[in-house]
Image (cartoon, rainbow, N blue to C red; front, side, top):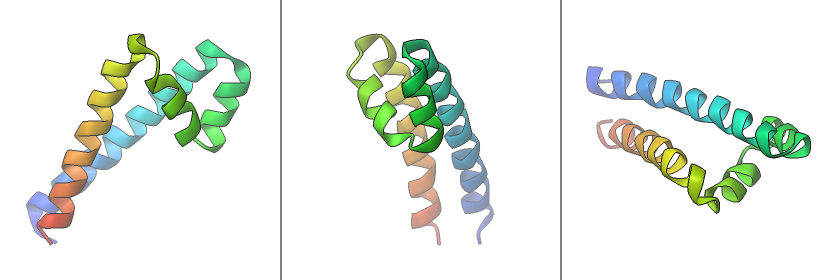
Length: 77
């Protein structure tokens, strides 16, 4: 694996963990049920929270960064 791909993979994993923790925190602010859903199946609360304009900018920014670094990993192999 080229060094660029390795570094991008690490950034992608770290940003994924940051997004998941942020999603759990936001979900527990909304309701306990949504927080538990974020622990088990994070895609559903993510889609629900994306409809809220207050959280949309931060969630889209983190998800876009993860997608960018993941695509670098895929295309440098």
